[in-house]
Length: 113
Length: 237
Image 1 (cartoon, one colour):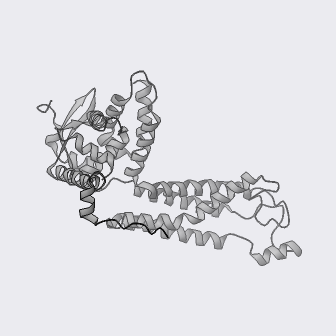
Image 2: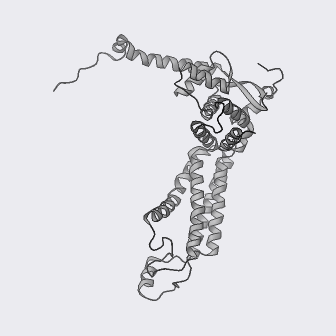
Image 3: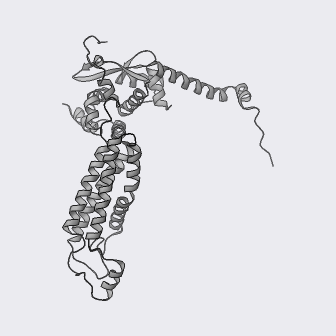
């Protein structure tokens, strides 16, 4: 899962949001690192909707234009949790030497010759 | 309509019409909200994202290559036709003015690159199109049909044209031959018509790639199929 996709799903954890709110929430959650362009957001939403990770919750008309609100599905929440676990596991390899030794055994020293 | 709205509307044209009908207003609204006040142009980043987003919906790189091939073919057909109206400049120059005497390196490079693209693109574009449409029977037939017709046309064009062979080139350079130097004679009106027909077919193929998926398979279609989502009266936040 790419980082923007991960943060789009994460932004919906606390409840459904519309497009611009997702952009703002994503930037806030990533401490400004992930700044979604509008086109990128809708590409991600299309892909996530096609995969069943995101669903349309409601639609309203604002300033004469449709504003859709998206929510996380159970499948999306599961995919997000799985990705978070995978990243946490990968991070532990770096931050926890004990975990590294347990996972891969002691590293062989390079031959000085 | 503000200048910003108008320019954002231009950018949205990267998406096919069926997609704009379903989501254009929503994307435009988000784009306008995300653009800082006072700006009259959308950011470069937004423009790029919309271009690639539209490209993805239209059929991705297959579609872009198909467009490139069609445009190259159109430009090439026009160029060759114009070249054919010029008289031969030299006994050795079998195709008149294809690359005129004294042409610059950039000119020669541009003509050669365009020709190479036109010759090299059909096979990958055809294969990519077949892969893309493999599970859509009717479209697959619609895609393959113009290709078969296109190659048939090219075969006819080759046989109808009076392209000089290598032997003829030698003969013309050293003895008398059937080519009338000083007369335009390589590309005929009939061949130009065939080129035009093939370009129409190429445009049809490109259009097939960007057609809307079967109803309910694309994202806006799926949502249109849920009428309760579209009535907003009791769904205000």
